[in-house]
Image (cartoon, rainbow, N blue to C red; front, side, top):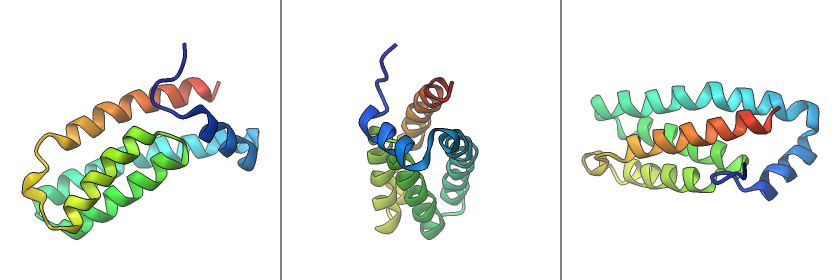
Length: 114
């Protein structure tokens, strides 16, 4: 099944740079960190803490881009920008969209780590 969310070229470059043995550890770390970053974004929305929100979105963006999850990275960048501009009231359903995209990326990464 071809990947739809992960840029294979970026992923393969990362795999070559980090080594086939280490890529699994990188994937595991990402899959552990991403749900916490989403949780941080949600909780900082409730407390209206734009800086915590921005930092979580920034980390999520960078981590996703590392694996070639480009659409997910773009979604996180939009959230990061809203946090930086202190426009948390404009986020609406964007976190849910991010979560849905993350679920697909996580599934693909697990399959690629076989």
